[in-house]
Length: 446
Ligand code: GLN
Image (cartoon, rainbow, N blue to C red; front, side, top):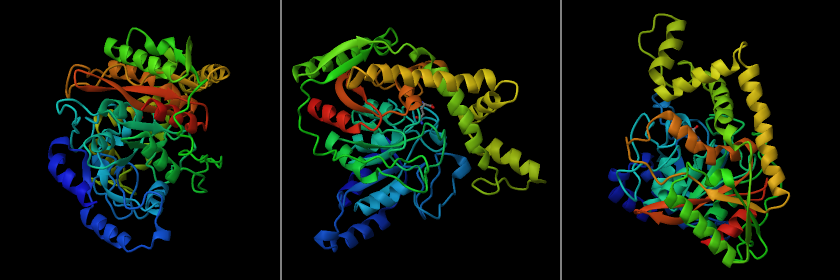
């Protein structure tokens, strides 16, 4: 824990991954844990961890990187926070993100811009950019992020680390500030595949406080890391290797396939024909759910409260106008429109139908294949404030990641190469509740 803070003090002025540090509490807990008898020591005993700032922490400010929650101090811990404590881990602080997890660069934080440790003029990806940058910079070996449409995998790829989006329902969302409830999933970010599997094992499992959490058994994820992937059948969707994907990324993924082949796997090209509808489908559903979830921020029960408002209506109006950033407001507007009486049939309901088709695309590929492989992101990390600023380009990049959330299946991003000093991420997508195969293959490749 001391080393972790040493590294944070040396680097975080530049990287800016953390929004809040809890050094005093962390050191006190570390000291207390030192006196624990061996039999009480959890599976991740004494290891420091950073937590994305949309996961609530008792007594520690939880902002969602929004002015709306700048001074919000929760009175209880999220289920995953309870679990990392049970495993003996030590929370060192809260990590920066795009406001309410809406974005792909972490530039949409209301408070600070996180920098990619590999090249400080690049973004770390997002929305879990702080979580990925902190691990890549060696400030912590473990962090928690959240993935609604790629927000664990894409920053893991941009920062050259391992990021897992588990199956929807694998981990309790109790105490995660909701963005889009049917897509949100908490996920671990780490340097190695084995660490990742250990952290997932510690935080997974059913929780009666989240009715969407699953009681499905969690296999021993570590025992499966044998290095043996002989006979593995890999599908490579042609839609994931198309024109929009940069040449350096394509070459790296192709080289990774050759490595997997040399380990005894085989691969074929397949098609996921509804991929191209994934982005609009995702944005209709995610914004609809966000508009409803974010209705609770009314300036009274939570967060930002405007000064000198003359009446209730003015409190609502000003709290939301002054508390939310532009992207959040934009999405609340889209979502409200998608759910409005005149449009919900042709937007929201239609999107739900396409969501089913996207899930069926995956299901039919998985009849003949064990995993799907492709890039995590179409390019390496963008420049901060650079040219890939327009929303449309950023939205298009989501095509590689959002179908997984729409289908509720697990996917991992692991490093597979470098281009011009920046890491490239390889994405592996698995069947429902089959994180074990993803870890096994990722570990063999690593
Ligand atoms: N980039 C996507 C978005 O802006 C994904 C966000 C996420 O997974 N939280 O919605």
